[in-house]
Image (tube, rainbow, N blue to C red; front, side, top):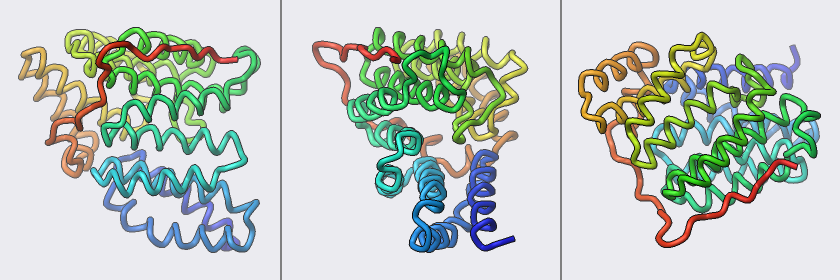
Length: 288
């Protein structure tokens, strides 16, 4: 195996460890991984650039998980910079940038960034879009919908998540294009998270209970499922159901101990958000 092939394998392995919520192991390999990818890009920019974008994306995702939002911002920004000129790579990197903005309380920036990414990658006709393009566009819309919810804009949230759901229906569950595991189940979990941000805990609980009954729930990455269970615990707590809140936290810990143990967000309230004060942000995006 050539050094370049070995490096591609190592980037893939870092993503697999992240999606299995093995955060300490990812921390251990990232410094060497980033240094190796940067050397490959210096020797062969065309071949190495997608690897560099992927390495910065997983770095940003991990740093956001661990509460290192400023460093996550730097990694996401470098992913976008490395992706410049390639709409697919830019859209993939924008997923992490949107997450960073939401984690730092900049919901408006998250909304504009992810909508712009959706515009760039949206197929003229969703019926003709490839699963990869639809997954990126749909995930950008999900991120935009979550950002709209953080701003208190229920109408824009519903429009954006409904549009994402239409794309998810075409992609289906059980896929992991561009490391985003987009599909109908992921969109419905996003509806639960959005409802919680919109101060409707009972609606969040309803979406949670409906979605986890599906077989497709188990097809999502462990990291995604455990993170959702932590949000579900918050929804149950706000609904006055402490027993269910404790039960899903135990489930999350059993599934992915590091998700509960190592994430500051599990123990801390959300960052303050730039909520709408007078008028809502209009949801004007339509794919194509």
